[in-house]
Image (tube, rainbow, N blue to C red; front, side, top):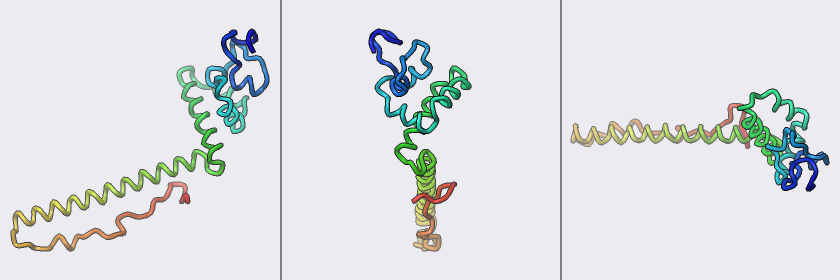
Length: 153
């Protein structure tokens, strides 16, 4: 597309390529969808549509527009990769991982406290009292994780 629309050294943006239009200097989507991001634009267009993307950009503050486009791109790519749950599935998976790590941290802190109690008891008592054995941890201290929206298999 040399000599048309933008400068002679640049191609049409992915949005204009997809819509088979000339890419004008004032193209609102050109900074966010360069020519090599056709698939990303296709995903965003399928999920949101060009009019809604442009509307979201117009409504966003100038300093927030980049963040808006990063969110649109991420959400549309996740929907293309995971058609059933999209971003929700990713968020639930991350919440599940956080919950598992927090439960593991709780278990480790309990074990650390037991070890400290045991070593303190050996140092002070010296009689080998097994009172720490009564406070053993059960296997139920770590339970399966669930997303706040429900369980994801």
